[in-house]
Amino acid sequence: MNIDLIHDVPDGLSRRARSFIGVHGVRAGVRPVEQRRPWWLERGVPAAVIDRMAAYQRRWGGLVLPPASQYEGGPKCLDPDGPEPDAGGWWFEAGTQRTAVPYGFMISPSGEFGIHGDRWVPLHATVDGWVEALALTHHAAMWARGITKLFGDAVDGIDLAGFEPVRETRGVADTWWRGADSLVVLYTGEAELYDHPGSRCALIYSGLDEWGLHGGT
Image 1 (cartoon, rainbow, N blue to C red):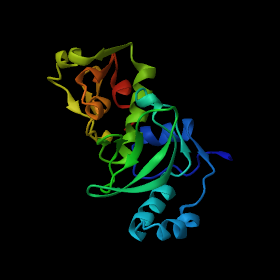
Image 2 (image 1 turned 30 degrees about the horizontal axis):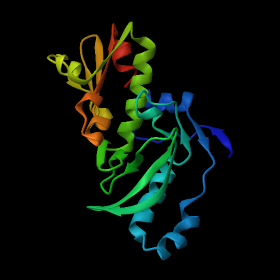
Image 3 (image 1 turned 90 degrees about the vertical axis):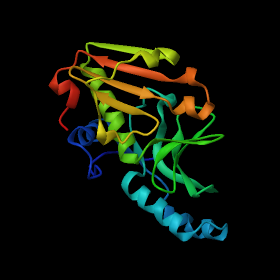
């Protein structure tokens, strides 16, 4: 598998996310979706679904980023595969897992990024949101004076008064909140997937200045 430095950072992202990809990302060689189009068509995959996969590959295909703090690091390499029908339309894989987890990272018919096991749980409304979240948490971890991790019922004690949602992360099950000098991340994806509230997790990045809170958005 060939590995190249990133020179074609996807447009439409924040300056922070573009910098994160350019500095920490690489592109791996991947098999073009179009080479597999006839095989998928023969097996009943609609042409429109393959078109969506091809568009996803043009934007994200082969992108390898540092691991996420949750979900066993998230996808190792962003690249579409495994289209499959489910209630509401066709899903496809967002990329291969880094480790053996009991779910796949999937893109929904409406473009959401999430995890799919016994049920579907959207984590972000778009793939851009997932990448923005990776960039922001990587940035915050570098600049925070302290990082606190809470689990289960302890998450309910977090006071978000005075915080505002970090909209570029487009959070659904997982949400990011910006305060005066801290960022709070609430991870509920696995808790929803397993129907186990004790699996909820929160990370609090504290002691952040203006640069630490925003990082060049």
